[in-house]
Length: 148
Image (cartoon, rainbow, N blue to C red):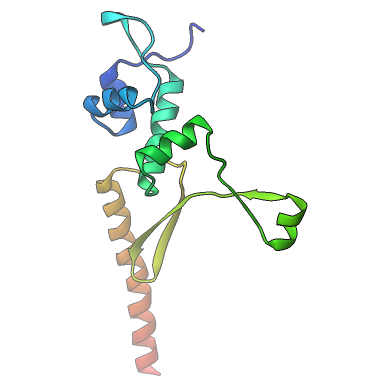
């Protein structure tokens, strides 16, 4: 497909938030498919980027590289029964992975496992904003309670 994006290894690494070395390692470990083309003409596609982002999301969710490899190869189904009754009928619900980040006292961010996290710097900016705005509301309520 002529409109399909083509990424050099550096571009793929930057978009995936990893180093070039990590991309090569993931290819070696069969977590990513080998690049397309040969020699200096090799490149990566959108499929490679999507796979890299999925690997990163699973890693951030605490999965080991072995578990990620199994999940990517479809060797293990990530489904669990809802309860005894549905298990008897063979109905299964798909398990989803979520990450939880405490951004301020009493404030937690829930992020689906397949969503790419922003950089640590951007998360710190969000946490600071939350601390300023949520804490400010709490302080204002405490002051109002004291004045009553």
